[in-house]
Length: 201
Image (cartoon, rainbow, N blue to C red; front, side):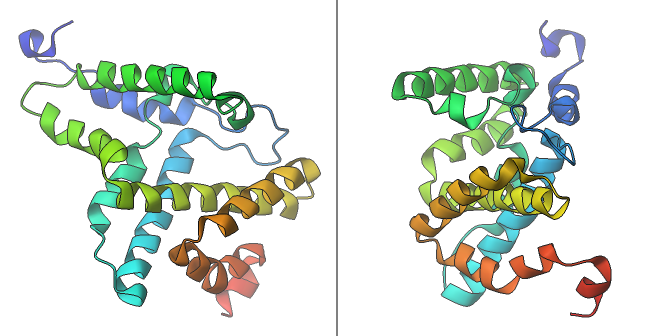
């Protein structure tokens, strides 16, 4: 239905359906996580990494742009659901095909916007394909979120995420992202603490 003709657009209603999409579908979760929670946490950490990059390492990241990219980075999954990583990256053919499905999902969402707003939101998704430095920080934040999820599951006595934690940590270490290293050194230890312990820091 053409939103220009009837004045109604489903874009934001669909975007906010992220709260219905459950992550980590192949794993037993002590604490279930939905896509809206993940996107919010990813945005906070992406903002932190970009800020650290600028203040500590003399980079020139567009912090606001990266934060917004993080908020929208998994929005196509309102159509596809959360595809487990072992499936999504099982081989190059599947990875390419799923990438095309995500691009079509993104375009389907953008098509629901009034024409006057399409460039603004289109640029957010386009940046994920073209702005390599911002995308690198977004990927680093995404991995840190996954690593924190694994730590939290272990904290609740769930050993299901042990192998995932080791795999994700290896990818973080191999990425050579100095912003991630700074975050891990200064901020990550507090995630394993109780509320009382955190308040004493």
